Length: 118
Image (cartoon, rainbow, N blue to C red; front, side):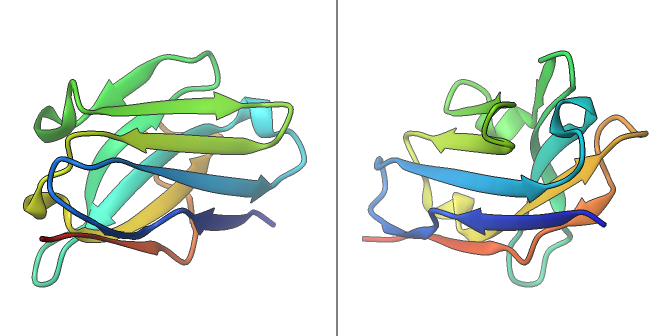
């Protein structure tokens, strides 16, 4: 059973930064590919960033150069550092963990709201 708990969302002005965290309750975290997805109102859920068990990363074109995904295997946690935020980044952000697929599309967290507005 995989449990994921996201935190770090909130309201930020355009150009600001936020760091999301996802704590995973899994038996061997280092074997999981981890990802961050987001879903804006009226839109489909989309992959934002992913990191493999070997540290290989993948980003959506819309966030390249602004967002950074990282993981701390000792803490069973994956992070998403978001800089230069734009109003179009407003969405619910979801964490995902998957031992078999790349990009990850397995277990989901409950989501954390990110709102970028002045």
